[in-house]
Length: 161
Image (cartoon, rainbow, N blue to C red; front, side):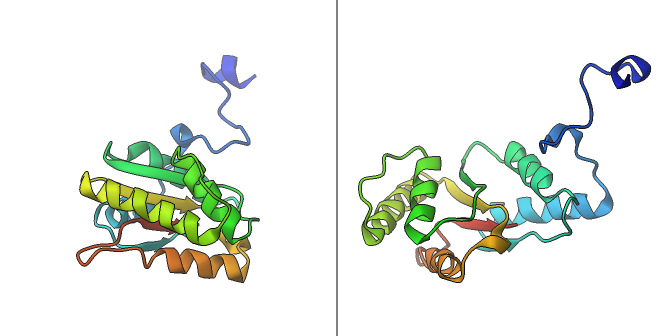
């Protein structure tokens, strides 16, 4: 019905967060601009909050699709992980072969990756969607990851939605 009546090529209402159909209300535009600014200027932690169904995930996907080529990204969609699983998920999403199950070694592997990216002038972004579901111990691990930095700047940006 929608396709013929409105002359559309595809169905406009799906249950997946397709950023092509994001409606930029003033609040969505502000959120997008602030996220892009925070990532580009290496602000460390960035938080995106809003009511269920307001478009946070769609906004995040739109941000990810608009990032410059020099930004490496890891997207964690399932926050129901322990500390080591979170680190493994991040490393896997960066396309890395995980070398160990030991948390210290996982952090060292991530830090090596971050330092290499910094030497290349690249920015690194970790996005954790549904972050409100992180266990307190996992949230503390995320906070500790933000300590990975040089004297000049944070080695990664972390977006919690």
